[in-house]
Length: 311
Ligand SMILES: Cc1cc2nc3c(=O)[nH]c(=O)nc-3n(C[C@H](O)[C@H](O)[C@H](O)COP(=O)(O)OP(=O)(O)OC[C@H]3O[C@@H](n4cnc5c(N)ncnc54)[C@H](O)[C@@H]3O)c2cc1C
Ligand code: FES
Image (tube, rainbow, N blue to C red; front, side, top):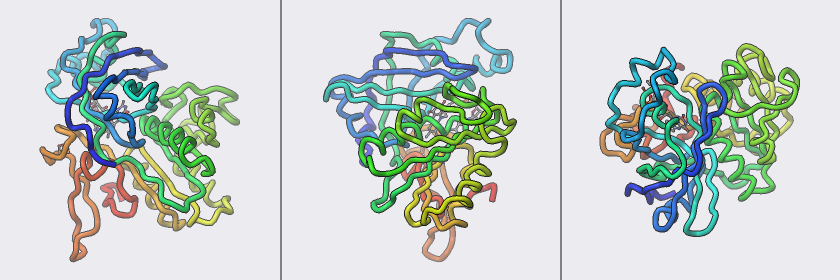
């Protein structure tokens, strides 16, 4: 996928809904030339959003743990992936971003409302790629890693309808899953947005408040142990905290399964200029490691090439 979008586009906010806890869903719309840049977005690509001109919420609506950081100036754009992209007409594209409020920029997202204009650079990065010949996709998400995998599920459903999808979504607790969960929480909880994309969903929470009690990677390993599917037919796509990605990559290697991981780094520019987003990778000609850029060469990498700090 080409990085066709290094020019800033103006998007119009058409919705901003608070979800549970610190999560929200921002819906923005691109029209005209800007819409053209988003017609062929790949799941896993991202945008850099400028939020410096958005207002902070009223002080009483800022939780005490964010009161100090809320006052920080935000000079840099912030990276966000897509949860969904809908082409209404060739010159009108809607993009949904799920956000988790963590600091000054994400606090400002909460005050955006219908009709507001925001400046966005993107789509950026490479996104996930679906190798030919694979029959089963395992989507393994930790916390805020779920939105781009939800986008991937919809994308695969539309473009590879014969591929079977199994999703694993993990979080510390039910409240930390960035989607609404329905159904009996302990037995077979459902995230309608994943089921809607024809995906068999497996939820894991560290405290057992929904689904499997334990780490999502333990649930994945249990599933792989019980699965009779030939490993060469499976592809794993994963997004979430780095220790989880390291374990997903290790398990995939152990079971002989191809794996793509979406890495997260602090990103100053998002377009390959500042070198702030290095990811250590294997692959030097003399066996040495090389540094690739998360924003430009990634954020999606082959799980086998990344040198994970936590391994
Ligand atoms: C490719 C990519 C896609 C992303 N997609 C989403 C998304 O869809 N939804 C979403 O809510 N967030 C996403 N993020 C993370 C999001 O960019 C940060 O949460 C946001 O920049 C925080 O800004 P802030 O000013 O609110 O908080 P800050 O004060 O800047 O950060 C709050 C805390 O989060 C940590 N943090 C911030 N950004 C990163 C990062 N990039 N990597 C590791 N730690 C970080 C900081 O160290 C700090 O502890 C994505 C990040 C990347 C790199
Ligand atoms: S964020 Fe600047 S080079 Fe990647």
